[in-house]
Image (cartoon, rainbow, N blue to C red; front, side, top):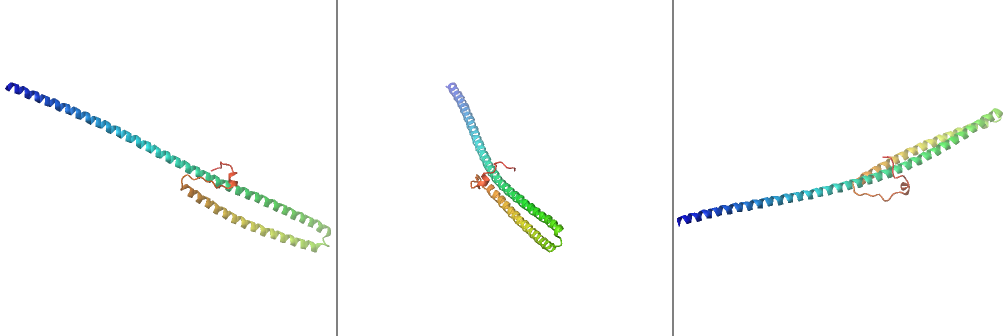
Length: 199
């Protein structure tokens, strides 16, 4: 009986060790499964973060593109307006020069005619010649005053143009502070201009 008890005790200890080993194996398997699940969760979280980051970058790129297009459109309109203003000013200047040339030609013709008449009838028409010369001087003085007035007007127009340029620059800065700007109220003359102008 004592021997049987010893055998039973040995079998019991053996079973206890086997059960403990089995439990440890199951626990290690559980820990391994937990680590795999955690790794899978971390990978899924990384994937979600990467997708969100890519979405944010795409949105930022879209916003920058919209701002660039709005800035380009406004700059094109400003440049088109300035081009029209310069063309109109050049045309007006050309007309003024032509008119002045014609006036000068008339004056020269008048002087030539006066010289011819003076040679022919110097004595008889000397008084008339002096009066005509005085009128010519008055006319030239008037033209000088008109040219000075024109210069003053051009100076005021230049100052007005600079003020308009400053307003355009302020408008550009204002538009750059907003996203998705689309300029719709465009003057018909600006629509007629080329879409691409030098920067």
